[in-house]
Length: 63
Image (cartoon, rainbow, N blue to C red; front, side, top):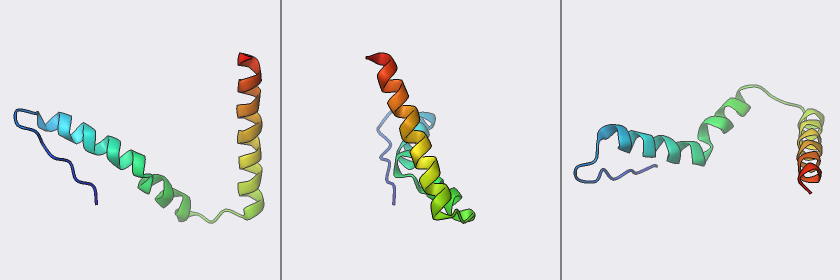
């Protein structure tokens, strides 16, 4: 459960923004979307490898 304490004099919009940030960090929505459709292990592994290759390419460009 996410708890956001609203400080005295703080606008509701600001508190809502903090709530949204906390909610996004938990990854609940991302996990829910991933569970909606089954993905085979081979496909998951392939996407992880693609991401790793992409990140490695980015690191080599900066060096």
